[in-house]
Image 1 (cartoon, rainbow, N blue to C red):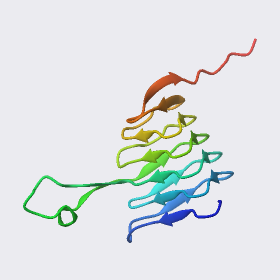
Image 2 (cartoon, helix red, strand yellow; image 1 turned 90 degrees about the horizontal axis):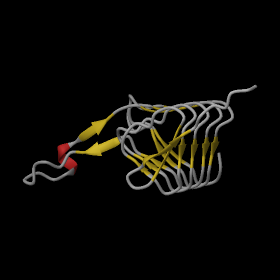
Image 3 (tube, rainbow, N blue to C red; image 1 turned 90 degrees about the vertical axis):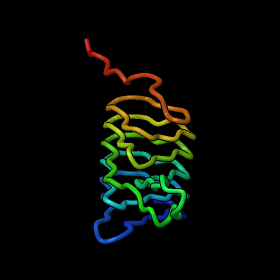
Length: 133
């Protein structure tokens, strides 16, 4: 882990589980409200934010803060790469072997061995395994 990494489990049910040989770059902010699991051999570049919480705001008569929100465990599979300035939100699990392009905002699950990028992140291509002769 590099300088300036913020880790937060937010309450009794929160936890962070980081696999072996994981790189977490400077300035990352990782929350594990209901759990954050990062698989072995992952690379998280600088300034990544993972916030598995989404505020409710349907009732304009109440403050947003008082309406609570939704949270769930977020999982990043083994051998993933998240580029600089990536944001992962409430419903965004990352499948094994996937890549998230720099500056992307991930708002839904990413299938295994998929490359995504953009705001919101969209599938760019699949990472195909090459067959050996």
